[in-house]
Length: 300
Image (cartoon, rainbow, N blue to C red):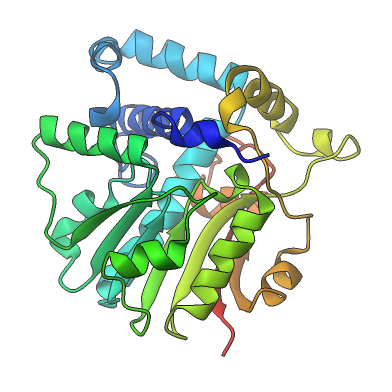
């Protein structure tokens, strides 16, 4: 069954992701663990007011950790991973960067001064995108001319037709960022998006995504925080349930069968080692353990 309610109102999970990025910025006050200084502009006014107080910040973090252990840490790592790829694409003057499900992503604005050549396309459902534009306007954040907002329902509309009509050039090198999206889509929609990227992009293009491994009764307790994550999502985020996953160890064959070669893959331990250790090589906390990162390119 298609998860239609996602497209009827602004995404709750996108808002919660912005909250977690804002809390990370307030807690760590550094570019490694809390770089998103704009995340707070997307929060309701009363959130912004109360989160000015340190005690409320700490209580909010504690309550989030209780409900979803390791998700704050995962969001810190996820932000760092895709920030790194985004900055590298700007450095290489990649022609296009496509955000497949942009949510309240702020990279086009945080890194605007680094962007000298890359055209950016932000794809998302209209309600979330419209709210984002309202928040940017209220915060007086300048939207660069090279940023294009493109409304889409990934479960019912063609990424190819939507992007091409917005000016996307399929003969130019492109970085596709698919962050925080795949697991909310029907498997058929995942395949359609992968097919579009594979067949309508320059051979030197790349696709970066996060995904979840398949969880069963046999392995659910093998990964930190996963049982609590699934229970909380089912109880409190019923409109945005997880619909897609890839069995552990099958990402390479999954992508190869869809026309991609795996360039990089990070499991939960590798993510923690790379993105969640401080200057003293101490882990700041374990992440929810069923998330993974992958970067792939179309097969030549």
